[in-house]
Image (tube, rainbow, N blue to C red; front, top):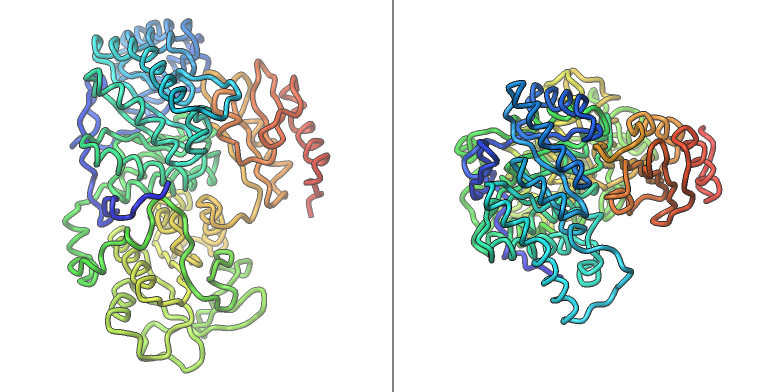
Length: 601
């Protein structure tokens, strides 16, 4: 469904979206409350000692909410034991029950914990194979949703329990898929149906989320949801997260790019960074993201260039850059850059282009062709050249008209948060003025912490890359080795789905539903398959979101019981009943049978 650009709030400059304030126990969320960070336990909910110990570790690490899976009534009832043990130890942090499929479990949990999370894609509707719905059938399904969720809402009202309606890209109902497909629109509509029912019953203690392993889908769906809520008149708090982000640097970059893109637009009231690691490792990343965007709005505005802060026709971008539909930057090709060509990286001698500082020249690693770099247009040569510019300089050039030999390549600085809006404006203006030179985003940061550098760089550049506004990236860490910043650049392009240069992995953080050592299996899978550039491999803890969230995977391993997994080829089950120990060898055999295997170089 096409969405008129004019319906959207202006994504920039940064100003926190005003949402309603709700209470989760004694914790305020939304409105003027700080952005909250949270995580989720990964051990069996019925293992009291383990889950309580993990909750305490999370709380001590700064988690302001702790989520625990409750796949059935038995686990939901056991939440009372867990909560009581935490209270006896002096911990009052709100608990959240994570529910899939079972309204009965949700109704039990809502009497115990401070918040319940439900997934509209599988809370009331189960797979039947049906693909066509008449209008009458469609409405009857919505009526059944109301009948099944109304008891939960009444319990939440009676007990002061908050409710998160969390749409997952990988688990939309067949009914929603039949009308909207697996799109951001479908994710939003799935949540809106539940919001309508809650509001009809005068229940407003709601949090909403749009999650996907694809950072682009997650960002687009969240933007679309915000727009819908603004039009409806009530904007509920938003929970942000890229689900199944993976582990290590990959997981951090993918999460930071998606979450950061929205925080940069003022969207988000609580975040969870999902990593296939011990859950307490998620919290420093979440804290860093929130801290990075915790800034004074007036300071940001005061540093905007005149061309962006005062000239409305040059400041708004949504008429040019569609916030919910991906379109690569419109540019002409030059030296293999632009016009839809793979987004390039400038960096060390392994990158697409290397910069030789002594002669201020870019050299193509593929062809050896050279391009001189200038910082001021007064120095421009008659032959092709690259211009290293600020957003203000580019905007002024466009406003005044290009009367000189234009640069063949523009390298645009985006080093700080207060430069993000001007850069977005400047790129939108190139489209308005049909200025066709390719654009490379250059980011410099004085930081010797590679982990922090990758997180903050992904957060800053996330929206520009997710929206397809760059033809290249050039990262510099000042004190970081160029080999490292080049690696981060390629990882960032893969995380934002602009360019795939190695194997792509999708893996969930695990929860109490997982019955095998997913962290260890992910490492083993990666170790044996990381040379298979172009393939996407999923490793998922259980069947709840597993197959859906790895819908783009070529091959997958999904938990099926205690130490048992199922192999998938695409969306189809290939082999069941495989032991955890045999999983990697069986996966390799499947990849070989599919003709996608080659030995490491």
